[in-house]
Image (cartoon, rainbow, N blue to C red):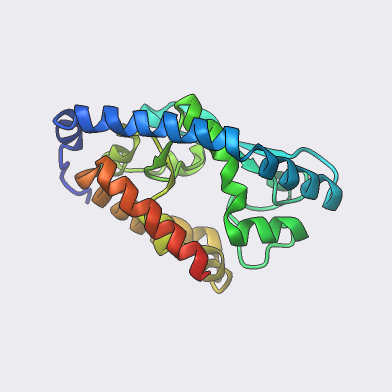
Amino acid sequence: MDKPSLDIAQALEGRRTQLALKRLMDVVISGAALLLLWPVFLLIALAIVIDDPGPVFYRQVRVGRNGKEFRIFKFRSMVVNADKKGLQITVGRDSRITRVGAFLRRTKLDELAQLINVFAGQMSFVGPRPEVPRYVELYTPYQRQVLLVRPGITDYASIAYRNENDMLSGAENPERMYIDTIMPAKIELNMKYLREISPLADIRLILSTIAAVIKG
């Protein structure tokens, strides 16, 4: 049975000023980061193509704010056409992951490319991680409330499930475990964020994410 709506839309309506400030922060910081980090982007791009010739970026369709689909940017960490060679989730030491890709994933550098999505307004620094359409189709009306805001590069779920691949590697049916157990748990953490959404909450989550990456 579905959980009753928490009327997240009404709560967000009451935080218009905070959400406007949050978007302003996204634009200013992502724009500055793109200008400053272009040498890093170039080095990552060179490492990717030297290790495994092909596109530098991996662009996958995800579901964003209000259910609108967009293409997310990531530095490619898997072999070309990896989507056609396995599941839409990665499990353990997935054989599709390249040598450079393993490093990019471990350090979260593959996510840096999403600064482009943030600047373009498709994403925010902090918000529910965007899912692929196939999994969003399984959302209940309660769960679809996470689509009321821009998806983010990081959130509570990204920190809590940063070792998701290892968790799935021990499952008999990894995709079933993701759909039945991990995805609902992530959405509950997303709902926690929606109840407290603000620029200050974003800053706390960004600092927590950096700490989690440093700790490995």
